[in-house]
Amino acid sequence: MGVDVIVVGSRGLGAFKRVLLGSVSSYVVHHAGRPVLVIPGDTEATTQH
Image (cartoon, rainbow, N blue to C red; front, side, top):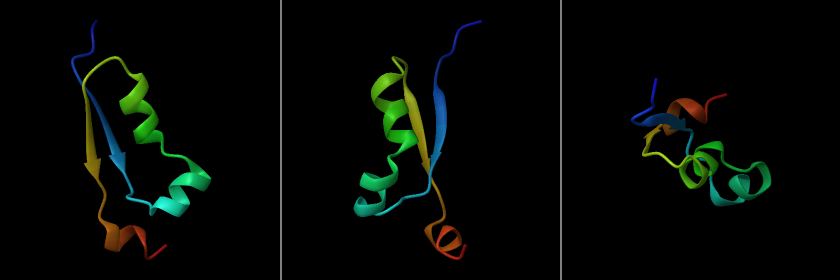
């Protein structure tokens, strides 16, 4: 069974947090070897944690 596209979510961290924590979606985009669709998260909802 092949994979046509990989779908991942992104919380939209700021540049500083992304440097400290890394970005799974960014890693997947650069290493998957398949098309990747990144779905942005709701920034208002993610900042209320």
